[in-house]
Length: 81
Image (cartoon, rainbow, N blue to C red; front, side):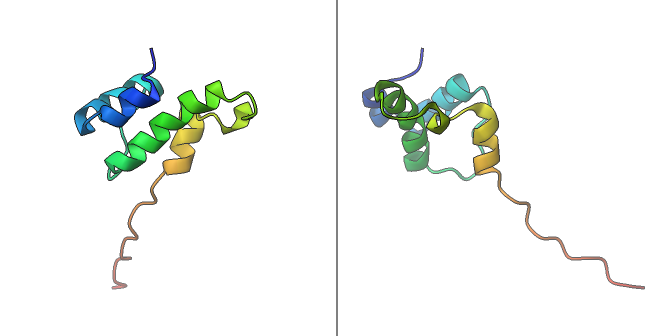
């Protein structure tokens, strides 16, 4: 069962990480703040309740990974010999 918005608001970081894994089935991407986790986790139950919100806005694991993908840090190219 997915947590409610009220439950999400009261969660500490460890609980948010556990909820993320339960809802999306993936580990939390590095460097996501607790406020961001709350916003993202809280959006879905609100969207499901709002009949006017098109399903295209509901997050899915595949779209989630694409949205929060962090580019790797640029690497220096090896010096020419």
